Length: 124
Image 1 (tube, rainbow, N blue to C red):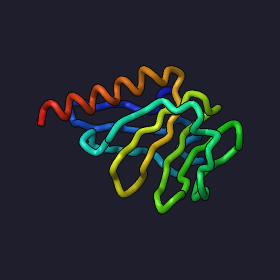
Image 2 (cartoon, helix red, strand yellow):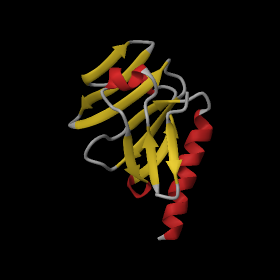
Image 3 (cartoon, rainbow, N blue to C red):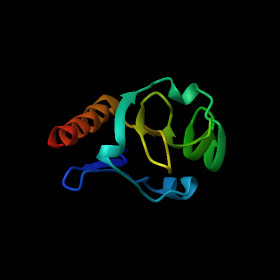
């Protein structure tokens, strides 16, 4: 179910939707420099919050959200199934902020992203 990789050699966080999520969300790949990632958190309640206006994407309340939502002047990317295991990745890019992603083991993903950010900060 993981759709995020951390390429430390290039200093990138890469989000690649899998299967039909590419089609439903109109996004094939999101690449963000780790220097533009502010942090990641596990937010089990994020899926119950108001998401904004879907444009474009798939929204099946209580089950699946994939694509772009616009809220408060920002574009948010969602790739969430179910809703309890949501990782929120805060990024400072013009394309999306934040990224909402679901994982089977969200704490491990949060720890990996935050460790990669810390490693990049230590290099600078």
